[in-house]
Image (cartoon, rainbow, N blue to C red):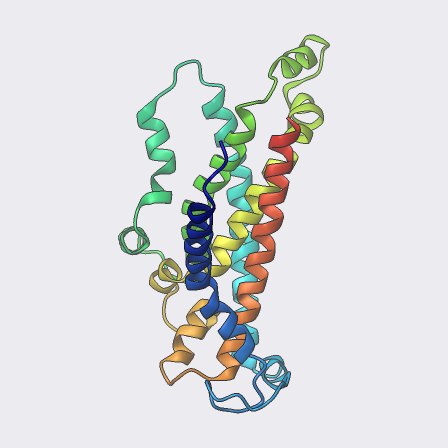
Length: 264
């Protein structure tokens, strides 16, 4: 039965309003990052001036490097542990709802609660905070997202291929390297890209676990320190770059995961 014309029009109108509410502010931010004027809201013509300013700002470049180090390190560790955790949970003979709840808890715990808990944990162990504690903290919540993405693929995974490989004399390591990992690779990469995106964007946990000084400041923390003195086109340009990197990684992640699920 076809949807009434008025009802379809209303549904599309509501959808358009929702998307406008979500993305018009982002579009304005991107547009103003190309503003020649030094004023944050008054348009003075198109210019790449502020992107050039970013390239010569030592503090921003240092924060960008710290963000890259943290994101890549956390992604590598979380991808490895998350993939192994997904395999372990999926192959368990007995399913435990309590175990699954513990694994995915970091996904639903408020960031501020997790940040305070991690800071208390590091303080209790008398660990000096810095980039290394940010990496560890990011692994805690990244791991759950990687595990969730890989498990989505494992729901349709044919484990008889693994058993056949073992029956033919392959070792557990060889079977994992030649059979399991190639079949899971798209979902593993998708999980890694999602973890990278979350790590690049994360602010609250990094703010609590970074410690004092600029040596462990990340880009979100740098943006926060800059906006305390007012919004400038330079901040708009920096936010646009961070958003573009995150959005690109997220789109690739979704395409990889969706393509694998459709092809399975």
